[in-house]
Image 1 (cartoon, rainbow, N blue to C red):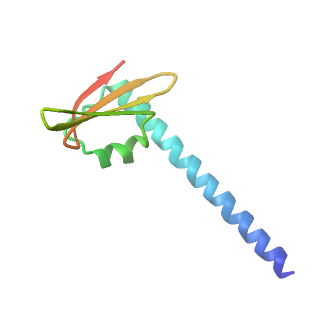
Image 2 (cartoon, rainbow, N blue to C red; image 1 turned 135 degrees about the horizontal axis):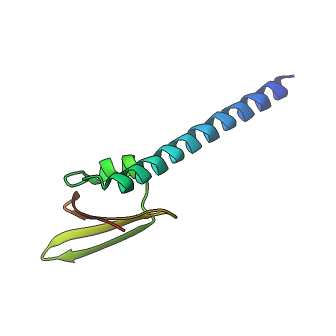
Length: 97
């Protein structure tokens, strides 16, 4: 009886965890689509703010230029392509395609 209760509890927690994960994923996709449609001005945002808004990027590139660390993140799905460039961790350039 105790094993059944534990098993049901684990299944219940798994279902809650999955629903929370997919809800967060859906919000991130909606934020990405909204930013693309509205050509949202993201200049001045930090890396942390971008990660919270869009999640992990599909592609990250970084290099040093004149002792400045320049990093480019790319977010892409079927409908949108957003390329965000950071200098010193702050958004300086956004390209929507």
